[in-house]
Amino acid sequence: MRSAPNLVLTPHLGASTAEAQESVGIEIAQSIRAALLEGTIRNAVNMPNLDAKTLAIIGPHLRFGEKLGRFLSQIAPRRADSLNINYSGKVNEADTTAITRAALKGFLQLAGGSEVNEVNAPAFAETLGLKVSESRLSAPGDYTDMLELSAIGEGKTVSVGGAFFGATPRIVSINSRPVEARPHGVVLVLENTDRPGMVGRIGTLIGDHGVNIATMSLSRNQAGGTALTVLNLDTAPSEALLTKIRASEDIHSAQVIQL
View 1 (cartoon, helix red, strand yellow):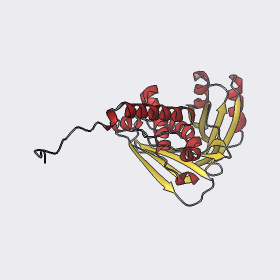
View 2 (cartoon, rainbow, N blue to C red; view 1 turned 180 degrees about the vertical axis):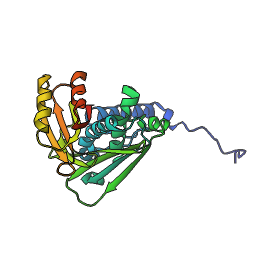
View 3 (cartoon, one colour; view 1 turned 45 degrees about the horizontal axis):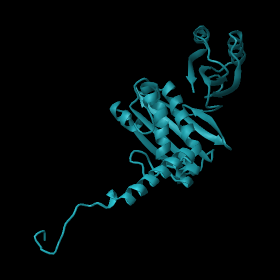
View 4 (tube, rainbow, N blue to C red; view 1 turned 30 degrees about the vertical axis):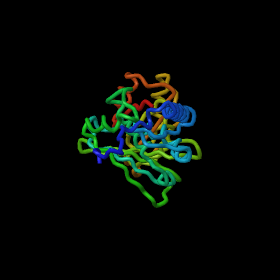
């Protein structure tokens, strides 16, 4: 064919004309504008595409998923082998890849710092040997939408679940215990013996050190068993306060979560 006298072959030059270059420039500008002003992501090579309809469904879950990931990283074993994000409710109707990336970003920032983002989080997880998976629960549950993150490592499983009360996000479970806490600021998580006077003792001890309790949530496995106390604090407790809390024979563990 190349030797045919009436045939001329040329390289593909369609995108090299002045008109094509102008059209490409306009399309790039429109894509950047949409991402910055509307949050819509189109034609990205390293991020899932997000149109306006999908963003309307999953938008509130992006920041919330990141915070749940950050919360989980602070109660998880130092060496986690796997991370699972379980979705239930209406959020199942959309592509949840972007939410998973946001949750993974939050989970990995404790190890990788501010350099971890939604783009490089999957690759960073792979270098750490962290297996990331998604699961879905189609059956209706207690909440219209719920995200539950769980991590396994060092023979231990930890989890945190979140849901929306209207438009307000709330942490609704920690290690499968029902709670209600705000997902921001300083959160103090205590595991203690379920016995009379514990709430007063904890409140007095914290108050004596000048720390104000914004909200408190209590959960127990059984009467007289082990209770979970979750407190939103206005300021972070000092090491001296934490030492006193942990010194109590009725308090088995005390963890400060920074969100």
